[in-house]
Length: 384
View 1 (tube, rainbow, N blue to C red):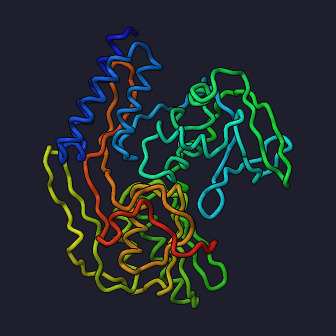
View 2 (view 1 turned 90 degrees about the horizontal axis):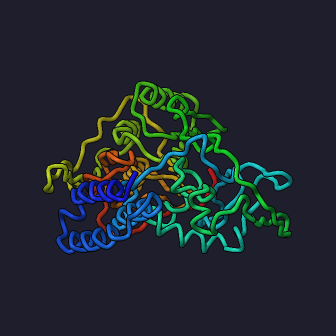
View 3 (view 1 turned 45 degrees about the horizontal axis):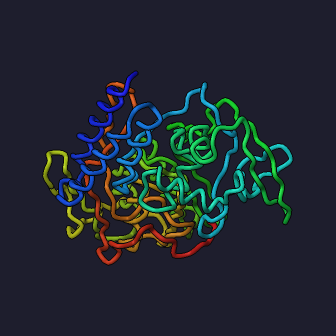
């Protein structure tokens, strides 16, 4: 593949990005994007420079739904470290699975002498995001090598090519440094299968529903009916909706859930569709919706658990519950910004077959007083 092929694909991406709502609404942004594209087009000569240029064009929007996606294959290399973020403000990078003599929950302090905090700042320049919580989520959870901190692609850009990389862990007050070799990717970051999207349990007088993907199918509807019945017949006083591992899906789960709550009226998100090239309001956040309540209702005390992984429709779900006074938010700040873009169109560049998405709509939360918030912040850090 030659230089012209890469330049053609970058142009293909640029023309698609011109349909983004931010560009349609703001002529100044359109001019800024054009200047960035022309500058990047001059630098493209091979695959690496093409990916760098495409990344910069999508990061421009600060929109987690507008991005390129380079899936892992079994031929790609990485450090096989399964991680998660801990601490009240997601400040600690922890092992989710032990490595050699480093136990589960061992904290990663630095990689090749560079602190985790420094690495987050650098990767924020390469990962399309709405806030740093989304950067943190995607650098350890998203199954694409252009996001994953420990992919060969990102390690090479951060530290140069090596067969192994020095990772320093903190365990019981001691620092332990290990040289960890690159190994073939084995699928350990894959998205959760749809058939595992929903579980629940009863703990004492509390019902906990884990919704890991927003899917509004018969199983979801049946589970809500079951739980509402259980709450009414077994004196359940507290209900917890756990969206802490939910990266999004179908927003119709929200209205279905609200049917089982005690609120009489509520307001939805405002959705403005730009697919036609101009703004078309689909729903208004000022419109008051009559709740179509069911016979059995969930308890009045409802908590919604969120995290840095809570994004897209899951974020919309949590914000809708918060803004309408339906649930108390607990956990850690969300990866999704309350007001954001979405409803992305998925496309593939013709020459390199690089997958990408571009938002086609704007979403505004019901409560206008929170329009400037960068994340949905927990009201309590209670671990439910």
